[in-house]
Amino acid sequence: MIDLHCHSTASDGTESPADVVWRAAAQGVTTVALTDHDTVGGWEEAAAALLPGTVLVPGMELSCRSAEGSLHLLAYLFDPDEPDLAAERDRIAGDRVHRAQAMVERLRDLGVPITWERVAALADGAVGRPHLARALMGLGVVSSLEEAFGPAWLGREGRAYVERYGLDPVRAVQLVNAAGGVCVLAHSRRTGYMANDAMIEKLAAAGLGGLEVDHPGHTPQDRARLRDLAQGLDLPVTGSSDDHGELTGHRLGCETTSRAVYEALIGQARWGIPLSGDD
Image (cartoon, rainbow, N blue to C red; front, side, top):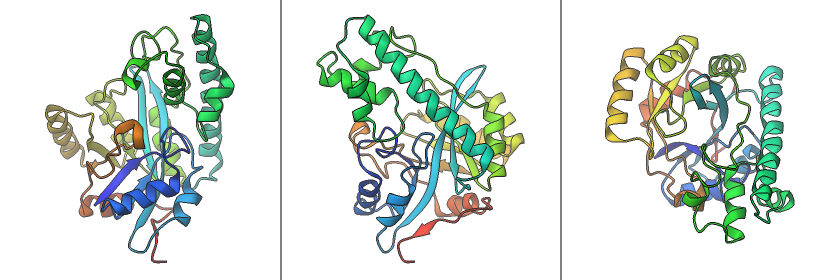
């Protein structure tokens, strides 16, 4: 099985990069992409943990923002030291901290005894709303992640929500391509990360490498429409779990990518190659 989208404690997953690689192998996922949010911080640990017969695709989920709202791009096999992309990655990471601190202050204004120190301790890498949600659960303010991400707290219409910086998606595609990588648009019909057909066409014209269609957050109707769109734009169609460990019910391998699509996708990259545990 091939799963091209998962997260570790380098961003908002609950398991270390090594544990992600080991759990993938245990569940029969022989090729896994580590795509933590706006960071390459888990690559080295994940690569060192590879077992014989397993493959790691180094990647990142890049935060983008258009006039229509937030979008996420899965970037694979790019040069992490390419200056322009690295500078944007650093800018996004810095804004993640400022945003999380601002949300802590809003929560405190609402009477929640949360501290930045507690949130930072929960975030080994890139800090995000899931770390705030876990802090709220630990304080007994909410009983579930769903409640934390609802309108009363951290949801997009929530009382403590703060918007954050994101790259223009067309520029993001261009930056990743210039760094020798390849991009796939992530969960484009998932609530909160919608990309309409016109935006997908625009990204394809800019050099988008593929479209994530088989995702746990997509309905059958979503998948059918996206498949038709991908076919018309000659874009490979991927499937991925978007696993975050305990937060998403340990679902590595619940959606997968075919071998033919995988080969077509990685063939577009000009800088990196997948890493094998047999090397």
